[in-house]
Length: 188
Image 1 (tube, rainbow, N blue to C red):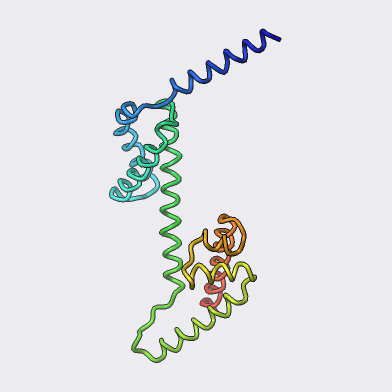
Image 2 (cartoon, rainbow, N blue to C red; image 1 turned 60 degrees about the vertical axis):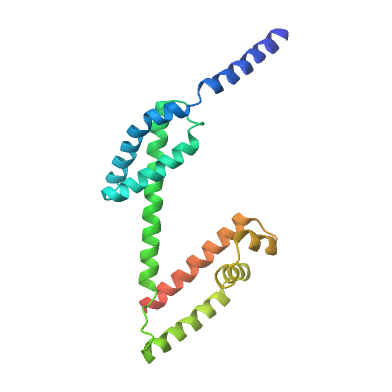
């Protein structure tokens, strides 16, 4: 039994030593940063982004990597993390742009001076109000508190007595359902 305890102590001490050895220092990160940034730009360009957008993405990636530099162990780990983070940033940027495009195409443009446009806009506001009321009670309540009352997610969670992640999920579902109803309405 004593031999096993001795072996366990040795392994614990070895793990502690390895943890301190495998941490990337600021100097090492700075030394590898230019190559890492070039790699991030290259990946972003392969995703189809223009040079300026690729540079912006690379900057975001470098900030994320800097926040993780103490958790990175070596150049291989840094390169792998660069690839993964760059791909995720590119996808997030695409999704955000795509989502804004979809919303812009579903919302009608109105001319404030046109009686027809004002009437149509009023009708749309009324329809959206009805659709929010038809949502499941909690989802509708979350959507109203967030969009109409401009409450923070944490505040909504406290009021409803649920977790903040649940509030985010309910809000996302309510928005998606409302957006899908609006798309179906506009296609008719």
